[in-house]
Image (cartoon, rainbow, N blue to C red; front, side):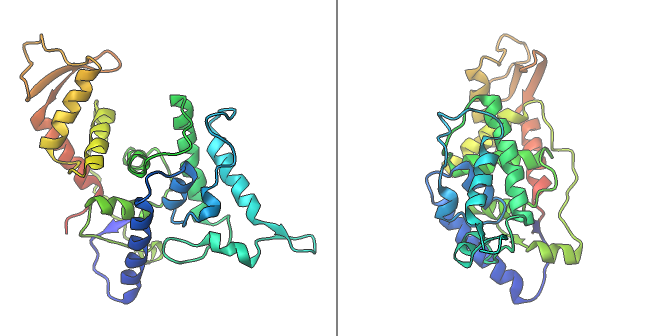
Length: 285
């Protein structure tokens, strides 16, 4: 969770250094499996054990529960009978419970693993809706997708500490420290701008444009970057009405929304919307 609170002590510095090192390492991967992505966004290091794909997503019986089922099976593989009839995770497998901050989880029922299940449920619904169950995904796409869920409050009870750590690698909120959840709770302080920038008639198109900007290494909140990309996206699907008297190239775009309704996209209003989206999640230094 990003905040502008200034706190003394080495705990926060150590936490941020550990998380940043791990985040940079895994963001350097060309692709993640969805299970890897869900674990990383929940603060768990995806060791080789978690990177296995037990079933081919392309040939599997496709359902929204496919990826949550994969995670459950991988978790089950960590447990063994201790000889007395009790199930336990042997010491040699506990390395697979390590967090991005170096903290080893006590059990696979911890909050972090619960969050990973939650993320994969949403990812599975996305796969089912789109009819695609890819075994690998680009890290930036996975991160941007989860940020969209959080932005529109579609995923509940999710600790976005780890998501913010990965977003910082794009320079978003780079001047903020990422606080351990325990510190946030102790200070009873969570950043919440609470403005009205969360919804927009072209929200999905704006997000696509921001994802493309991020993939290029560009600022996803810069109007000079986003407006041309949004214009191209709208043009590609034939949504721009150039015969309208309101049309002004590069400034005002009368468009037809996906539900058939009319909307006029103005460059200046999009600039305001981008500013709201930026301030919605990141506080001032």
